[in-house]
Length: 406
Ligand code: GDP
Ligand code: MN
Image (cartoon, rainbow, N blue to C red; front, side, top):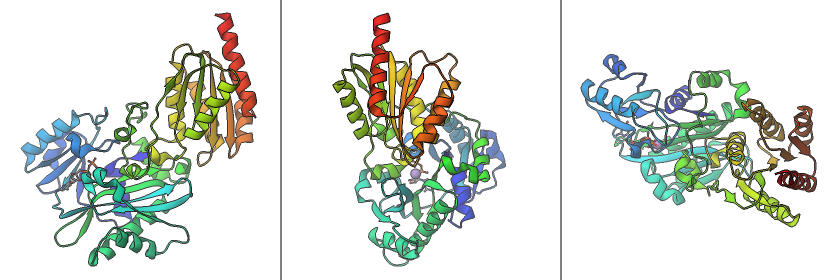
């Protein structure tokens, strides 16, 4: 689950990360009762990034300017998403804009501190210069200092920036976050630092432990926050809003289309190609094949594997000639239980029963339990199999049976 900027800043304030005085704006007329002095910045509160470039961040010197700017921002979609609220914030004059983030490294299963001296909107161009410090043991302020030094900071900035990185790390641990990012962390001529923007992704599996975060989600009336996001964009970059993602290779969710009738959904490029090969070797005729991407959420923020699975099913079920779908999924950070629940939820939510059989093979953490749960649903068109070979054989047989019947 992603937080909006103003929600992230509420958490920043709680842990002592400096933020500017601000006010939530639900309607342009709220600006008539503004409690912060002009000049101000008005910012669109959407989950997507790149608001600055898209025109979603505007400055205003007085109420008339501010109302006009607010009206413009409310009607400006950013990556297809309209804001429900804006944030009005005191204007800050940065001298320098830095980038800081804490993410979970999915392969090492350890937190990673990220930082760059050229942050703000310049970051995309310089993402190669993002410094990384892996927290490979008990945390100590030394890690944060090392990040600041690797970023090339000098003098008092080493202390002030590493203090912020440390607070971000504490926030990351306390709230079970997948990502906490400040871009930009502004530095003014006096050397003071200020979080001008904030992005937080909460680990969905940990939400139960944080009723305060859950309350933020229910305060957001857009239930389907992912509905507008293009899953199959040829450039996954702009569809991803955490700039932390740009520090890593982004897997593009590029679908592959073939002339057969068997659909394939997998998570991870290696697994997808291996599955496609095995289906081919077993004489199957694939129709569409989609890699849902690695399991970690920050590579494709803000969605989790379960979110992408839902979108992937939506997509594959509307492809041509489809007669059966093979889901070959490996659970890890998102366990097989979570994946099984996502499949069950998806099938139950459909207005009409899914018209083609689904063959599911789950491997990885809690796989046996997850298979039991799915089998216990007793859905006539859902086949849950232990081995990949059996799953492939079954999916091929089902697609061919249907071909013969046609
Ligand atoms: P994003 O484009 O969605 O990441 O939105 P940001 O909140 O990062 O804003 C984009 C840019 O606007 C930042 O990189 C800053 O340069 C600028 N900006 C945002 N807030 C302020 C502010 O309070 N004062 C000034 N001077 N610039 C700001
Ligand atoms: Mn930003």
